Amino acid sequence: MILLNNSHKLLALYKSLARSIPESLKVYGSVYHINHGNPFNMEVLVDSWPEYQMVIIRPQKQEMTDDMDSYTNVYRIFSKDPQKSQEVLKNCEIINWKQRLQIQGLQESLGEGIRAAAFSKSVKVEHSTAVLLVTEDILKLNASNKSKFGSWAETGHPDDDFERETPNFKYGQLDISYSGLVNDNWKLGKNERSLRYIERCIGALPAACMLGPEGAPVAWITMDPSCEVGMAYSVEKYRKTGKMAQVMVRYKKYLLQKNIPFYISVLEENERSRSSVKAAGFFEASCEWHQWTCYPQNLVPF
Image 1 (cartoon, rainbow, N blue to C red):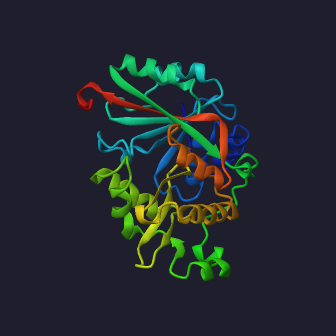
Image 2 (spheres, rainbow, N blue to C red):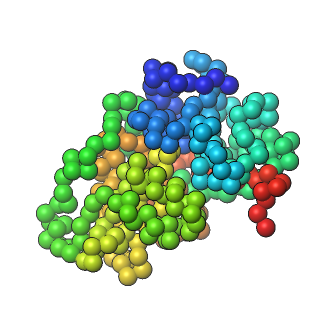
Image 3 (tube, rainbow, N blue to C red):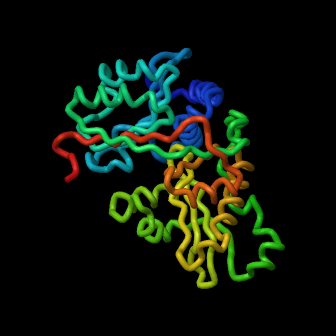
């Protein structure tokens, strides 16, 4: 595999990956962040260049110091020929199979190669899937690299009509000081490693919320290092009041203005969340969201 660290090559890859959306979105979104400051210190590997068949995004070595930190030890893969992924994953020292890790992608056919490579390393694999939801704008996304994170002030303040209708609520940026609140209400969180991960996401990437009458967030949403929107939550008192929908609509507007790619995954059985996301202008993509969680024998959970 070849390490791509030249800005011109990364831009060329970004534009090329746009032609494979939605299947390439996990990698496409990661390359976006790499091209805009690389706040999570990720790196890009390709099997060949300029013509490539496979792209792997992984954290730089200095990031993966905790063998149990599956929030950080994440690999994101896109392949033009998923059936051949097994050869790359088995024969190259690309993945640190001694760690607890996650492999994410939007191609189910990657699974066979991942499981075969893991089996050869005596690693247990758990596969999970979800519905991938995107917007029409993302499918037509311009692969320009001129977009950048702007000040939240640039998006203006909530509409006057919205202010008059709900004078005690204010839309704005989710402050990093609320990381603990997000962690306590995230199904995949509630631990110290997840708290550190959430702090990095909120501190480096766009995150929005609705502040309630008490001045604390009543609904919020964040973004991950691959531009996936997630951790969406509304406190019980304000559910079914439209607060989350209002956050989602304004957040989506901001991301579109800045040409920041985004997408959402929702568990298939979570019909209420799927309906809410669709009401905000998303629809189910032609591919699904996939994650393979890998455990070495000495780190298999009980």
